[in-house]
Image (cartoon, rainbow, N blue to C red):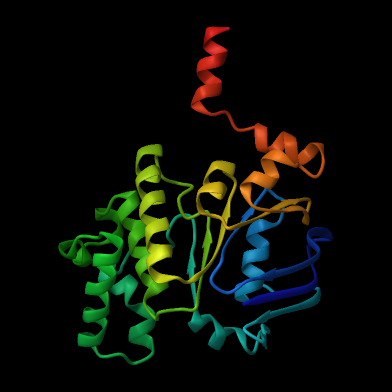
Length: 250
């Protein structure tokens, strides 16, 4: 679905990404992971055309992603960011249906689609007429997901969609999101810094460091066959409950 060829991107003279070659298979769930500042969010923004590479090319289903083509191509991509990115002056209904309204859908068509999406995301119908400030963090992320799914996109791009949520809500939404991905069968590209979350969602995990790919594979390959000491350190750096209990006993 995506082909990134010899991609590089710099900001203020500092290399953020590259050089990178990467292909994203149709129907797969690919997770971009790595420490803060490794380039994973920039890579996602390059895919959706919110920023352009300094060198190299990004293709989406055979079409080059350029400043001219990106606005039309983005109609076939759903994009979710960490804090939801909802407009505070619009209701949940207004936020989720914004692009559909811009494209000239009738209100009845928008409402019918929202009813289906609310059921899919377990969002209460009576919450559609509330404003973001009146919704919980988990509900705001559900609205953001509904907005991303509104036009029935070919791919979902999610930039740490659960990162700002408390652990209980995050746990619940992880289960719900994975079920949604399986139900819809769409291509998914997700950014996270959490190795457990990456293993939970990802068919394919891409670990980055300083803007380049250091290892790619499933969670078992990263855990059992790390490519270098950094991979091993990154995988084991996040404490599990078992680790904490073992430390408190010692």
